[in-house]
Image 1 (cartoon, rainbow, N blue to C red):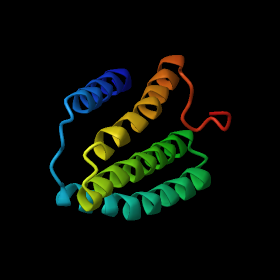
Image 2 (image 1 turned 90 degrees about the vertical axis):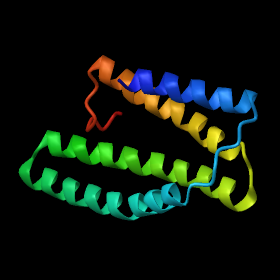
Image 3 (image 1 turned 60 degrees about the vertical axis):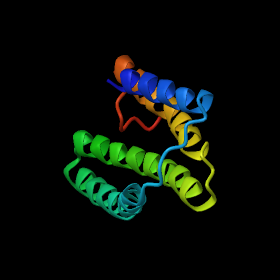
Length: 121
């Protein structure tokens, strides 16, 4: 699933670059990304605490996935803000392209069966 997502995001971003397609300003997207940057780290911390207390690898893996979402939300917010405030049409597709290797790595780790909570990850 992550590989399909990475290919789709890469394709759409490259198409936007080639076509110089400016995306619209997304106030709702900015608000959602800001909320995510506040709420998800709190959720991740709580999951890590529960995972530690229960000795649950599954909960620790879920906390790691929440951290992954925080990184993506920060990248998303950067692209949206640069587009909305400075009118940089290319910031949104650039942010998406920055996400592609992160998404693809998650897919690769999944195919390899690498655990999300693996400290060597």
